[in-house]
Image 1: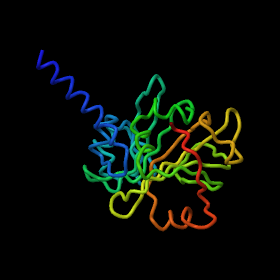
Image 2: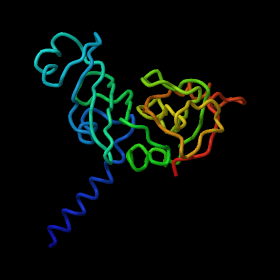
Image 3: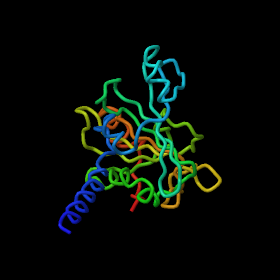
Image 4: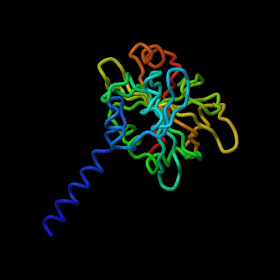
Length: 218
C-alpha cells in the first residue's frame, strides 16, 4: 500500500512539473519528454524528411531547420513545429508554433494546453492586442487584430517570452480590439522570444502599439 501511495505521489509530481515545460528555457530533451519524438523535419533547404530518413541520411546533407511533432489533446489533434537554437541534443527552443486541427476558444486554452495556460498565470504576464502581426511564424490567414501575452521575466538572459495568438471570430476575421472576448477563437499560436528593445518600443511608450486588454483566459 505504501509503495502504491509513493508511486501516485511521484506521478502527480511529474504531472505538475510538466506544466513548467512551456517556456523558452525548454530544450530538445524537455520537449521530447513532454510531447514525444518528432515525426517530421524541415531542413535548411526547405526539404521535408521523416524522422527515420533524416537520421539515416538527411542529416548528412543539410542542417535541421525545424522539427514537427504530432499529439492529441482532449480528442483534438495538434501539430507543433519547433525551432531550436542549434542542432545539439540540449539546444534551446527559439520558437514553437501550435496548430490544433480545429480552432479553440480563449477560455478553452487551459483545457487543451494547460502547460501554456500556466504561463498566463505568471505574476508578470501582460495581456495585450495589436493591429500589427505579432509573428512571422503564423501559417494560417490572420485577422487585422492579433493578441498576445508577454511574460516580463527574462529568459535565456536577454529575452522575454511572448505568446502570440492568431485569433478569429466565428466565421469572420476580427477587425477591432474591442471585439475580443473569452469566446474568441484561437486558430494557432506561437511561443517566441521578444527582445527588451522590441517590448520597450511597442509597449512602454505613451501610445503603445501593444494595447493592454483584459485577461480573458481565466
